[in-house]
Image (cartoon, rainbow, N blue to C red; front, side, top):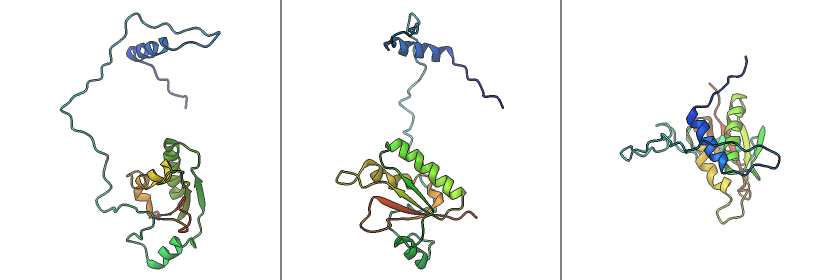
Length: 175
């Protein structure tokens, strides 16, 4: 299938040219010619529109807490999982990534592991240098409870009490 071509509107072209006009070109390249008069944007801000809040998790889904035993998992499985005796099949290391890249990597990793029928995975967030850890470690519990990946996760736990920079995830089975 041939790739789709996307055409830019006149407004898009004018905005790009307006932006490019303020940039100094590299030596040996030709500068982009901007239109004589700037084009106004057609975005309308309405003060009477309600503020959009992030979507809530499903009604029956309780938030995932790292280290807390959730409902729907038997005690034997939870003990094997929480003590690190349940083997992890895949591992994702988020060290050195920006929070945005780490977020997208995490979503892709969990979706792929779930689609491959993998039960237990490990995500290394790192401890971080701050008092409460790094940015990825702070954001990680929030990411786990987003509607995109919350339905795929059954439980989360640190593999060992002395290792807060790593989180093991028990994924739900595909039925």
